[in-house]
Length: 393
Figure 1: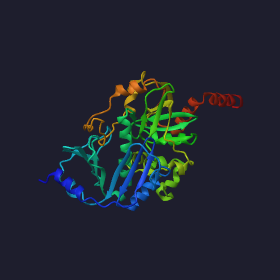
Figure 2: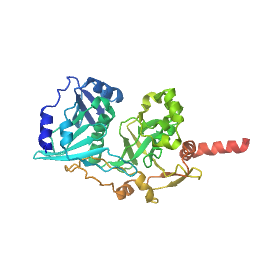
Figure 3: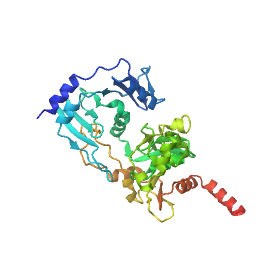
Figure 4: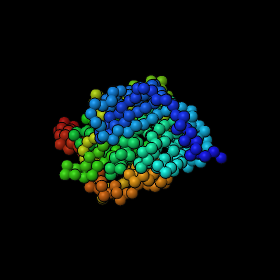
């Protein structure tokens, strides 16, 4: 049987030649220099990270400049075929093979190889104590730019986790001057509710992952991963602002599908908020004022309702917010995350336990949920509206 270590070294020694032009991605407290042999891929990343990506090297000194190589290549096929992969365990409710990992050990530091089973991509993630090897991707990169985006942004996420930020499985926005993090189990509707609220909001912060900083005199802050919302067809067809993301025939076809089938469909669309909503809609971070926990049920016959609580008082809600860093994560000490390790609920309770929680119960109804949240954020407006209704009803 072929030796994966030898095949990896052979792959690296014959890696493609990078284009002379490279792309810079400038994020808060981090910069990434992106190399590739594909101009099409770099162009697509430039368009995706509009306002944050530049072809020109920054004039000032940016901290933590990280180099990432994204290769359009078929050269990794032999290594992929010869590696005894270990399937990475997926979150509850998710099925099918997605990621597989294999760790290489060198005297200069470890490397985690990650294979995307469905797309054939191979990623090289050096440990934090390995300065010899580079972050690299091999495979049909042009066909799967979203996986390149995820690979880049995972490095940004990992940096924050090593600085003791806490990762939450939540969407985030700023509305009525308040920072809301919306959490719920996968498929619970957090992206749909976030986009509904954004109609009356100021800024989109994050779609699926939020980082929470320590409590200070001014409260907690939340920082988003700069990734556009990736939303299901069911979200698009029922939101007129999102209709331009698909043509009329596609929308008609999706509307004709049974609701359960449409809800379970694993198909994602990018929703560029600065184009769909308004310029400068995206904002990298905001103060955290409320956690919104979606504890509702699709088949419930109960009216949609809202309850104010905290994670300290309602610790059973914590799992909706918990999120594993994933297989790319490596600690500051150089230890890769082990397969099957889940986040510690106690950490979430300690860090976020006193944050006000708006718990949504009953049946899934985004229109009612939006109004309940708006009434909670602006009780005086709600009182004035109710008084007007009582006088004129």
